[in-house]
Image (cartoon, rainbow, N blue to C red):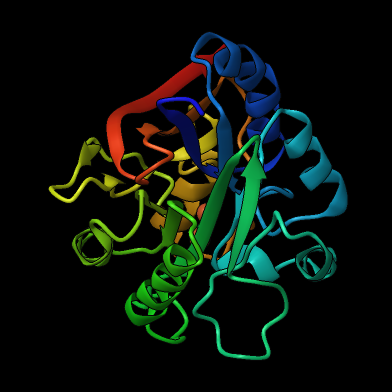
Length: 264
Ligand SMILES: [Fe+2]
Ligand SMILES: [Fe+2]
């Protein structure tokens, strides 16, 4: 067994430019950095809203192993069917019982078991069940089942909610990262009890945009207050995320590196 297991978690992938960023940047990055396991947040894969069979296949083609999501997961009908049948694709675990799909899963890479937990915050987002209690409950259950490596994506608007989750799950999971704002934070670190942490991973998509969308349209909305329809931006692309070296025997984080790679 390797002495470390290298994981890369990437922020929300936005539309075609996001998928292009994955396909153009990931294969060489995976090789040069010797990354074992890659995940993305896929809630914006299809035109910025939800996911479809084609866009999911395209994302997996780039070499990723799993997809977490968030509030936009329900936007395309196709997405609901995918959630029901593909164990590599998650929706937040704290949606009430009856929601389609699953909120956590265990995948394997070689002889390493990897547990993935997807959660969603409740500030400025739908009022679903408590992500803290649900997250801890799942982490405890998976560790009891012998899964050491646990990766957590808390999809949330408010930074304090994500920071708080970092402290709550410190030592209980290997990685706790945030998504949803599409803006990367620079606070990547290893918390005292060896959990790799970053408040927000950022996004994968058009670099010169307003969170992945055309800036002219976003500005028109801000300046006029009118509900102008968003369009995915074009131009140079980037991927944002956090890479962490994890100890497969203990699940503890050994090192972290914030990732921001551009392609023009
Ligand atoms: Fe998003
Ligand atoms: Fe979101």
